[in-house]
Image (cartoon, rainbow, N blue to C red; front, side, top):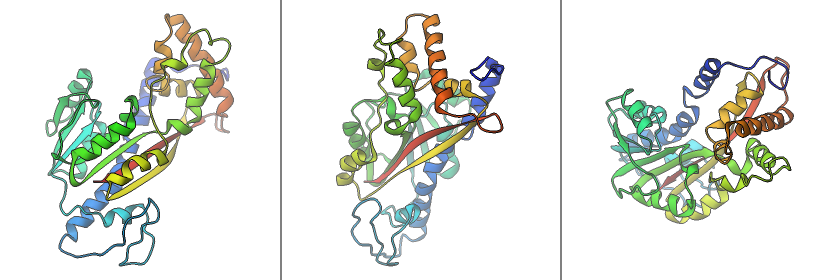
Length: 309
């Protein structure tokens, strides 16, 4: 039974639930839209000369042709890309969900999916033979001036030293190419804070669990300071996704493979792992109220960034 006295979901039910959440890869689709719009607009207008005032900041760029402050998409319509992307790489592609979105967006491009997991790449290869699937580590990957678009969907937050990492990846795209990423906004994530608080509580203080938490995400201002000097254009935004889940246990399952994973790996036995998850479940019950229909809304904030070299 869960904390509301309802029946727990079976393993099969949880698998179906997670599949329904992740099947369409919403963040990857959302991030591809402004990139797509920029490429399309520049392809249509590659012979048309357009003058724009110097880009100064994320929200304060004003296009001289319109005299208006552009929204997120119109900023990218004034980008410096003159052709559709010929070469794209998806870093940390996993089973290829976001990579296939890129294939649908740009069917004529040569697309590469790179991931450090052999199992993930093998699974991806079963879904498409129109993509170049590779095993590789983002931390050491570097192929300068080869790709028009470097795309990283929910993969960079596992890697340390984001200042050097993001600079290296931006410098790896071709001149006027695009570096785009999306990650959980762990600097402002109630669920992450709740787990940290549980790990620091008296019941778990004897286990140095918080020391094992290695997920890395920085604030929009930090990414701006690092990448603005290297970018012709830079766009950063946040989106909060409210996932409708059956109960609070589904939140624990949702987070077990990411934010909970470092904590669980720091516990020596399955019994302790289950006890910790129970403590986290109690915290979630207090943090996320049950709605009138008996379900739970789970807010999950993500940060998006698109930079033109």
